Image 1 (cartoon, one colour):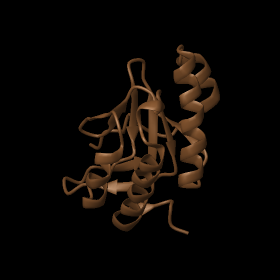
Image 2 (tube, one colour):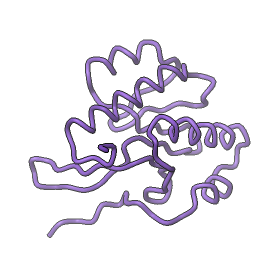
Image 3 (cartoon, rainbow, N blue to C red):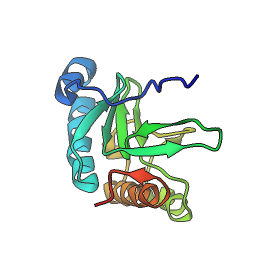
Image 4 (spheres, one colour):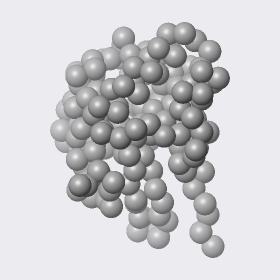
Length: 145
């Protein structure tokens, strides 16, 4: 029996989530700035995915194991210690871009950033746009016209 993904799109208001979940004023301002940027870069409105992820657009994935589901094209979560950025696909171009991104650390499925001032926003834009292009090429994607 297939398990239901924990990270699914919800009807929760993104603005309400940020205003109630994010206590630090700088993190709140950075969250609203990331929303503006990712909305522009993706062409999609922000939606809540699960309880804490703000995602833009969506795509359908299917693994060789048969597990499949939907996920946001790009997104972030304003977690207490740092932002989790879901903007990276492992392409040669993206790996090269990381050199100019600034202060971050890499996780298994995301990148961690303390604040927007620590990173190069034009490099973040390139990462987001190349990730959307990669997903468009390799998955069933809402980013296709």
